[in-house]
Length: 102
Image (cartoon, rainbow, N blue to C red; front, side, top):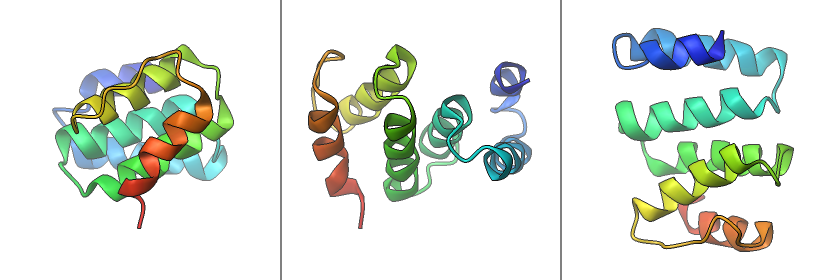
C-alpha cells in the first residue's frame, strides 16, 4: 500500500503525510514509510530540511545496508551540493546528515 500511496503523493500531499505518519505510529522503524515521508516533506511540501533529515537518519538506523535507503539519503545530500557515494560507510552518511539536525 505504501508504494501505491507514493504514486498519489503529488495529488494529495497532506493526506499522504497523514497516512505515512499513521503507518509510522504502528511501525516507527518502517524504512519505506520513513523514506517516503522524508521525500514528501523535502520534495513536495518543501518543509524545513531538519524533519526530512531526521527521517532519513531513522531509516539509515533501521536498515543501514538498504540500497533504497542509502540512495534516498545520497539524493537528499546531493540536492544540497554534498556528493556522497552510495557505497560510503554508514557513519559517513550519518555525519553528512548531522548538520541538518538542530
